[in-house]
Length: 101
Image (tube, rainbow, N blue to C red):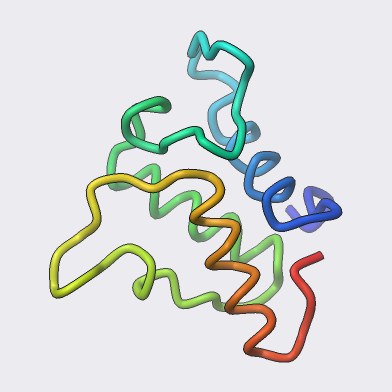
């Protein structure tokens, strides 16, 4: 999946999501973009979110600690946008001393 690594974390997240949903037959106006919501727009179930996290960790060849993004105050978040996921990845990669590209 490292071939999906793009110029920015946002582009990488979009590429990975598009790869995951390519056979779902979703009709998205304008396709997947920064404001696309995983649950509201893409109808992700919890297993799909886990699959996305694993695919992103494979793309970056590192653990990214998605539990810190997916849980707040002991509860799972209701939904996440592409831009929220990308910002999280950029923060995690920068904290590890790397780049999100």
